[in-house]
Length: 422
Image (cartoon, rainbow, N blue to C red; front, side):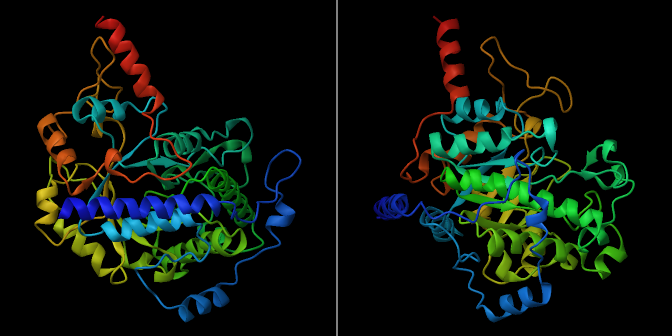
């Protein structure tokens, strides 16, 4: 009976997603660009978030965890949200963060399980560097994953800002201890140099989100992650930044520009503030996340972290392990209250055995990496992916205007493997 219900549910979402093909023409308001393809700052700065008006509008809106916070969603993104919401607490989505174009982690998953994670995480880390340093390879990879393989996409943003606002040639950074002169307070204060940088960067990323929107890619968007820590410039750097509510102002500026100014239609919002001082209005996020890195092998459900996140999250919102050091055991998850929506191990040696600490993967003659035994065993990974409660790539419903092809790097590996083994 359960299998029949699952098939009917998958079919329902397939039809819902297919219906969106006729409505996928619904697009956002394009970011204004100059002749060189950069954000037109004259246009960009003409729009300014009115915090008081925004918060009043958010207060007037009923908070319904079963509905997306965005009122702009196209049909495909609405179908993805519905699928996530319907699956919550009965399924857990296998996810994985990627950073390098080789996506070596895929070979571990595929050679061990014959399957892949349902959600791939990518990053806008290089999108706002400007000039020749700008690199949107991560966006390209995300589009390819959804359009050609039918997988789901999550995007985070390691936001690089000038190390010294007075010295543009001094480079950019996102770690707080690498930044010498960039005021967080100024960043959320119109009329300052920092504010202009912030607006330009938000609109630069908005333009990339619009590329994804045009390609038909729904996005689980996680900006300003791990804000409760002191390691990123947007985090809780000092008591002063908390008192001035810098984080909240920055979050609302991003939300307002993408939702109310550009009116993006493909965003499912993920809040990852991880601290009671970083809470934001519940009508600005769909999923609350927490990042957990135990200092030794731990495949438990991380119940204490679930409870910690629950205490600072609006009741009923979906909760996720937006980053983790170890894949939780499905049996542990569904035997507890900590029924995470998805888990996402970090990239690199969190999955594969490295040639050195933090180094590239050890591979055999066929170029095949192996599971990092410090993180999990092959038996554990096989068991986790085989569990009917774990949503993997092969278990996802199909969406119209997407293919279900294996990624090209896996096909290339297969061809090489066939040649080597004759």
